[in-house]
Amino acid sequence: MGQLFINGKIFTARSETDFASGFLVEDGRISWVGDAGHLNPAEYAGAVDLEGRTVLPGLLDMHVHPALMADTADAVECLPPRVESVAGLVEALRSHPAHQTGADAWILGAGYDETKYPDGCPTAADLDEVSRSQPVLVWRADRHTALCNTRALEIAGVTDATPDPESGRFGRYPDGTLNGVLEEFSAISEVTAHMPQRTAAERADLLETVGKRLLSRGVVGVCDLLATTIPHPLETYRTVAERAPFPRTALFLGWNRPHDLNDLEAQETSGATRVAGVKVLMDGAYSNRTAWVCSPYPDSEENGLRTLSDDQLLAAADWARRNGVQLAVHAMGDRAIAHTVDLLGDLEPWLEGTPSVRIEHATLMSPELTARLAAAKMRFGIATHTIFFYSEYEAYAKNLRPEQVSDAYPVRSLYESVEALALSSDCPATAWSEADDVFVSIEAAVQRRTHTGAAFGQQAAITVPQAVLLYTARAARVTALPGLGRLAEGYEASFVVLDQDIFTVSAEQIAQTTVLQTWQAGDLVYSR
Image 1 (tube, rainbow, N blue to C red):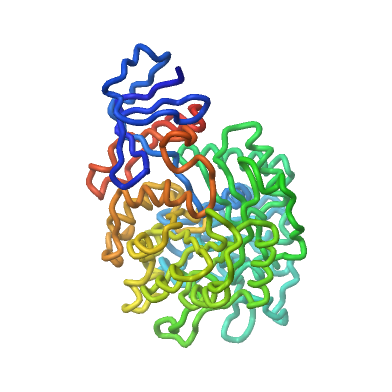
Image 2: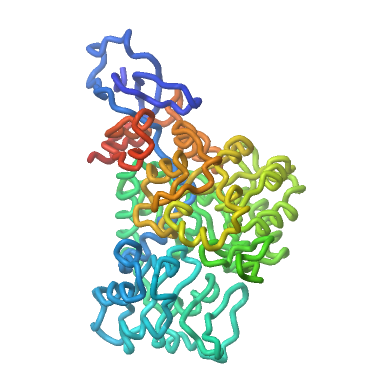
């Protein structure tokens, strides 16, 4: 007869208002959902009484970086409130287990955000205070910038005479000497290429730990938007998924080394863990003024960085079309987004049922740009965020012109115009240690307030059911994760049980929601 779940407040995600009180699970799938009041639980073996708890479909994080989370697991966290100054950054890095253990041991950190530092921007001279004999490197919160000490530059062979790499920059003092700042991936990789590499077994163990964390957050499906952070990502992910519960995974390969991308075989693009696309970067990050924008940044003549040529974008699109996968375009600035639509908008889509092209982040979207994207012949999807303005308010307050605030992460207008739309975490490439907590993003979407309490474009606020849909049914339209996103007949029995009713608690309490249980294909894979 299957397993019956009764006496719950079950949000099915079939619409903004569709709730049920029970559902039946058979062979890992939902075979019935509806009003359980007329059923006799005694007729079902092992009926589960949900005791009035709120139940959601398993959550989907459609832009996250589990491989990066695993690969930087031993980096010291340098996010606020632990680190809120240059002096605090130095102190935190000195706590790294490798400190004073030998000249070849790297000291690593992640999450610094100089916009919150009263004592200015850190440089190599500051990291030299951590160690002059050991290499030190710390990634900025957005992961588009890193900072290293003098020793790390020496190991990498980067000198004052070294030219900037294509689509990146080496930061310099006014006199032209290096200051240790590495802007964008091409510059960062000049240094990180010299770091010791983990073994395949070590990576798998770390990724398994990340999977447990995601399941504890209620996340049952993910898109890794730069899986090639680690070597052989598909093999590593599948190894982990075979030995332990892990979210359903769609991998996006990086286009930064196109000569390494061979055409895909059918077995690589099918199954619970598969290659779903390729990712390119059209620009940088808004928080460090490298997003490519139409109007110069306030008090500046700079328009950010364009990090991809037309030929590269079209070549990546051709590869995606040839292999039957998606093209994901990192585009934060309005100029980057508009140029992507210019180049791809009139092309024929190559996928059915899912967008051929995804826009990642979509930070600055005017109504006119949103209308262009929605009306294009190409079918676009968008994975955007609220965690960015929530956690990085100081940077956005500094980098946005006042008239642009209404166009920044305009989730409400996107919800109304773009069917394939998801909220996502971008974890760990954010300035918030709990960025992968879905309910922090949902609260920010509903309140449109930052971590400081400041209002941020409140006309773009959405309702709780709408925000949940952007982590469930609507999110599932951005990249196909078959069977996930709803609690409906024929769908996978993947769902989460919450400790409070997010549909009725005050908006200020949503982020306090805790996942009590996560079920995946009818199996309990996490219990608090």
